Length: 154
Image (cartoon, rainbow, N blue to C red; front, side, top):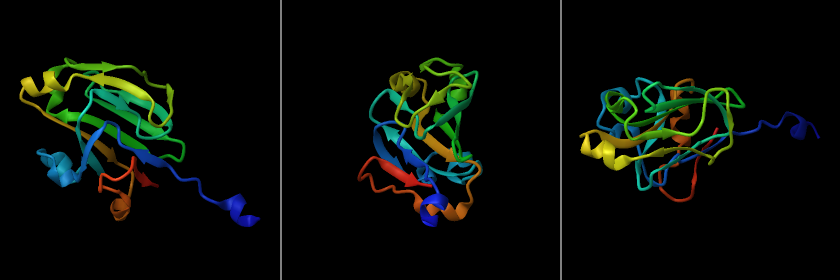
Protein backbone atom coordinates (compact mmCIF):
# COMPACT_ATOMS: atom_id res chain seq x y z
CA UNK A 1 0.00 0.00 0.00
CA UNK A 2 2.72 2.48 0.94
CA UNK A 3 4.67 1.64 -2.22
CA UNK A 4 1.75 2.85 -4.31
CA UNK A 5 1.46 6.07 -2.31
CA UNK A 6 5.14 6.95 -2.50
CA UNK A 7 6.04 5.44 -5.87
CA UNK A 8 7.92 7.99 -7.95
CA UNK A 9 6.35 8.86 -11.26
CA UNK A 10 8.96 8.69 -13.98
CA UNK A 11 9.44 11.08 -16.86
CA UNK A 12 9.60 9.19 -20.15
CA UNK A 13 11.91 10.77 -22.73
CA UNK A 14 11.35 10.21 -26.46
CA UNK A 15 13.42 11.20 -29.46
CA UNK A 16 12.23 14.61 -30.74
CA UNK A 17 12.72 13.59 -34.36
CA UNK A 18 12.98 10.30 -36.20
CA UNK A 19 16.54 9.37 -37.03
CA UNK A 20 19.71 7.90 -35.57
CA UNK A 21 20.29 8.64 -31.87
CA UNK A 22 23.93 9.47 -31.09
CA UNK A 23 26.04 10.53 -28.12
CA UNK A 24 26.60 14.23 -27.57
CA UNK A 25 30.34 13.62 -27.95
CA UNK A 26 29.66 12.96 -31.66
CA UNK A 27 28.25 16.45 -32.25
CA UNK A 28 30.62 18.86 -34.01
CA UNK A 29 30.22 21.63 -31.43
CA UNK A 30 32.33 21.82 -28.28
CA UNK A 31 29.55 23.37 -26.21
CA UNK A 32 27.39 20.27 -26.71
CA UNK A 33 30.02 17.54 -27.14
CA UNK A 34 31.77 18.55 -23.90
CA UNK A 35 28.41 18.55 -22.05
CA UNK A 36 29.05 22.14 -21.00
CA UNK A 37 25.29 22.82 -21.12
CA UNK A 38 24.33 19.49 -19.57
CA UNK A 39 23.99 15.81 -20.34
CA UNK A 40 21.73 14.41 -23.02
CA UNK A 41 21.79 12.98 -26.51
CA UNK A 42 21.52 14.04 -30.14
CA UNK A 43 19.65 12.77 -33.17
CA UNK A 44 20.69 12.79 -36.82
CA UNK A 45 17.26 13.62 -38.27
CA UNK A 46 15.49 11.68 -41.01
CA UNK A 47 12.28 13.75 -41.01
CA UNK A 48 11.26 17.39 -40.75
CA UNK A 49 8.78 16.92 -37.90
CA UNK A 50 9.90 17.85 -34.39
CA UNK A 51 7.96 16.50 -31.40
CA UNK A 52 8.18 17.14 -27.68
CA UNK A 53 10.43 14.58 -25.98
CA UNK A 54 8.46 14.84 -22.69
CA UNK A 55 5.14 15.91 -21.19
CA UNK A 56 5.51 19.45 -19.93
CA UNK A 57 5.14 23.16 -20.53
CA UNK A 58 7.00 25.21 -23.12
CA UNK A 59 9.09 27.58 -21.02
CA UNK A 60 10.62 29.51 -23.89
CA UNK A 61 11.12 29.60 -27.62
CA UNK A 62 14.31 31.32 -28.66
CA UNK A 63 13.66 34.39 -30.90
CA UNK A 64 15.72 32.73 -33.65
CA UNK A 65 13.47 29.63 -33.39
CA UNK A 66 16.43 27.24 -33.27
CA UNK A 67 15.80 26.10 -29.68
CA UNK A 68 13.04 25.55 -27.12
CA UNK A 69 12.99 24.95 -23.36
CA UNK A 70 10.45 22.54 -21.92
CA UNK A 71 9.83 21.98 -18.22
CA UNK A 72 8.47 18.59 -17.26
CA UNK A 73 5.98 17.84 -14.50
CA UNK A 74 8.74 16.60 -12.16
CA UNK A 75 10.84 19.73 -12.66
CA UNK A 76 13.08 18.22 -15.33
CA UNK A 77 14.20 20.89 -17.78
CA UNK A 78 14.85 20.00 -21.41
CA UNK A 79 16.58 22.13 -24.01
CA UNK A 80 15.80 21.03 -27.57
CA UNK A 81 18.43 22.65 -29.79
CA UNK A 82 18.01 22.25 -33.54
CA UNK A 83 21.24 22.17 -35.49
CA UNK A 84 24.73 23.53 -34.96
CA UNK A 85 25.31 27.29 -35.35
CA UNK A 86 21.70 27.64 -36.53
CA UNK A 87 21.21 30.77 -34.40
CA UNK A 88 22.86 32.51 -37.36
CA UNK A 89 19.90 31.60 -39.61
CA UNK A 90 17.62 33.99 -37.68
CA UNK A 91 14.62 31.68 -37.90
CA UNK A 92 15.00 30.69 -41.57
CA UNK A 93 13.96 27.05 -41.95
CA UNK A 94 12.10 26.86 -38.62
CA UNK A 95 8.32 26.82 -38.12
CA UNK A 96 7.58 26.62 -34.40
CA UNK A 97 4.02 25.49 -33.64
CA UNK A 98 3.96 26.17 -29.87
CA UNK A 99 4.28 29.20 -27.62
CA UNK A 100 5.67 29.77 -24.12
CA UNK A 101 3.22 28.68 -21.44
CA UNK A 102 1.62 26.04 -23.66
CA UNK A 103 1.23 22.52 -22.26
CA UNK A 104 2.55 19.78 -24.51
CA UNK A 105 2.34 16.02 -24.44
CA UNK A 106 5.27 13.75 -25.18
CA UNK A 107 5.44 13.09 -28.94
CA UNK A 108 3.16 16.05 -29.73
CA UNK A 109 4.27 17.89 -32.88
CA UNK A 110 5.90 21.18 -31.88
CA UNK A 111 7.71 22.31 -35.04
CA UNK A 112 8.42 21.78 -38.71
CA UNK A 113 12.09 22.07 -39.60
CA UNK A 114 13.49 22.46 -43.12
CA UNK A 115 16.74 20.55 -42.68
CA UNK A 116 17.61 21.09 -46.36
CA UNK A 117 17.70 24.87 -45.75
CA UNK A 118 19.98 24.28 -42.75
CA UNK A 119 22.30 22.04 -44.80
CA UNK A 120 22.47 24.52 -47.70
CA UNK A 121 23.50 27.20 -45.19
CA UNK A 122 26.41 24.95 -44.18
CA UNK A 123 25.13 24.28 -40.67
CA UNK A 124 24.95 20.98 -38.78
CA UNK A 125 21.51 19.36 -38.64
CA UNK A 126 21.77 17.30 -35.44
CA UNK A 127 18.99 17.86 -32.92
CA UNK A 128 20.36 18.02 -29.38
CA UNK A 129 18.29 17.17 -26.30
CA UNK A 130 19.99 18.60 -23.23
CA UNK A 131 19.04 18.22 -19.56
CA UNK A 132 20.74 21.19 -17.87
CA UNK A 133 19.55 20.31 -14.36
CA UNK A 134 20.37 16.59 -14.31
CA UNK A 135 23.40 15.24 -12.49
CA UNK A 136 26.04 13.74 -14.79
CA UNK A 137 25.70 10.37 -13.04
CA UNK A 138 22.30 10.04 -14.77
CA UNK A 139 24.13 9.85 -18.11
CA UNK A 140 24.03 6.05 -18.10
CA UNK A 141 20.20 5.99 -18.21
CA UNK A 142 20.07 7.15 -21.85
CA UNK A 143 19.34 4.36 -24.32
CA UNK A 144 21.34 5.24 -27.42
CA UNK A 145 20.94 1.80 -29.04
CA UNK A 146 18.37 3.01 -31.60
CA UNK A 147 16.10 0.17 -30.50
CA UNK A 148 12.65 1.37 -29.47
CA UNK A 149 11.33 4.89 -29.16
CA UNK A 150 11.95 5.48 -25.45
CA UNK A 151 15.35 7.05 -24.80
CA UNK A 152 15.17 7.28 -21.00
CA UNK A 153 12.95 7.03 -17.95
CA UNK A 154 14.02 9.64 -15.42
